[in-house]
Image (cartoon, rainbow, N blue to C red; front, top):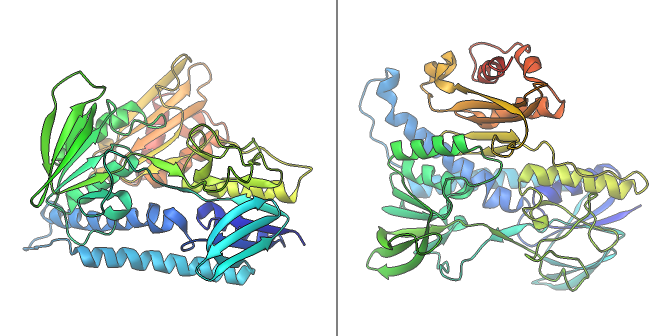
Length: 461
């Protein structure tokens, strides 16, 4: 029986463990904390749980709009919100533990250090043990980037992890970084009643290649409607602690293009990126790129024969998303089990979901990424849908990018209620090489929000 050792029990690690165990492999999964990784404990699931509490507050604030009479005074009970988040996380973690036990996956607690494909050393409070195997998968993930100029003290200067554990709503929360995490937290804490300011060095919110510029502009409008202040092309140069908070200096970015201003803040949350968890890997001979991410080939094998790497640890040159790690896990396990029939990991069609207000769903090329190609685009406004009017969810759009001559889908970008769910249809259509006409000729149920995909496709037929 083949023996596989996996270091890291996040979405990539536990998926690989379960898939390999089902195939009859003897699996040892090494995890230094709890099964579930960043996604379950400090990422996807906790933020979406807080987002649900924020949604509930916003719905209550709009009751009169829906014809519901009566006085309803509500406020976030942060200890209860955090307790609910922990309960959700614990429930899902217990499910993973049970699955591991049912499939016979041996879970070893401790810090795993790779020696080679056949040996992993695990250090824990009980001492060190050696795990001997045949192959290894690195699924060690990433951690929040610490800025030397803004060292987190978990009181005044917070990491994104800290923001998920706050026992009180800050009066004025200043968020450094207008990427996915920063924007999600901004809407959550604004709904909870905080004054919120985002400081972003780039010239737009969500400055990611996968996010269409039109959607970034829509998000900026929605933030302004809610009273979220946005400082673009600016960076935090200094935080001066004071009584009950701090004075924050924000400077133009790049430097020298304007004045330095100050803003008050009772808490500063730093959400400016992530760094790889690669301690000890270089010593084991694993090649790292100049920024420290693990280098893998198209089959996800590292420079050490028999050692594969998946998920965040392979860096942003691939795609740092939980569902990408899951896909990579299946690829890596297949390639370990079938060395004579290995397959390359594809990154051609990878949807992303951003849980702002409204939600954002993306897949494929943006209009900006398609520059230089002959393309056509269509934009359909969410508010034109009957279901959107009935729900009172009017902010949003559906944007489709197609090849000009063939009408073949190149990208779909959605902002609006349930965009994260609707994008799956677009991902399937791209995966199957559909045209706008084929999407338009697919009958969509009425009244639904997914009709926006149908309507946008119809504009390109």
